[in-house]
Length: 214
Ligand code: ZN
Image (cartoon, rainbow, N blue to C red; front, side, top):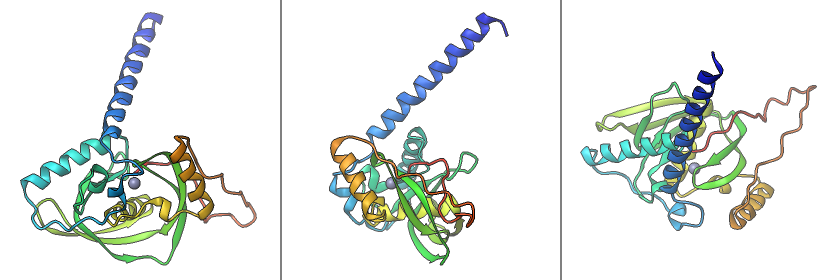
């Protein structure tokens, strides 16, 4: 690659990155943030699945993608309706769930760091069941059941929490909650300390993956 072409490619990449950053900021501006009482409110079941709801779900998926999130609940757009969208990985199709309900959770649980699009610049450790079965309606009003594990199970539990007015602040260890609240009030940032590495025991319970906000 000649220097000239390399410079051009570099500029194109910078332009693309600037565009993505701009889109992310525009999407995040539409998300309700910490301090808005809607985030502590319980959303109402949806009585009718129709074109209006499908359009709303499309809008939610676009905002989730632009915000580079893995999930978004209607509550986070200020709408107290029981609908969520999620995409637990770039290769998974984005999916909308209407009136989602947890039908079963595994005894086995895992602590992992979670971020939230409604809680800018903070992350907390949250323990959640590793496997979950969720019942819901799709955008055609058909019943579906999702058997989820790992990140997908975590994202779905996080979003259903939003529909119940529950935030990761309510599920984090007390010290982390306190530090995160301080950061949110002062406009700072917070992330939990890295877990101790215990090679003799494997330390498998607490684990770090690239975090994705939801
Ligand atoms: Zn969230």
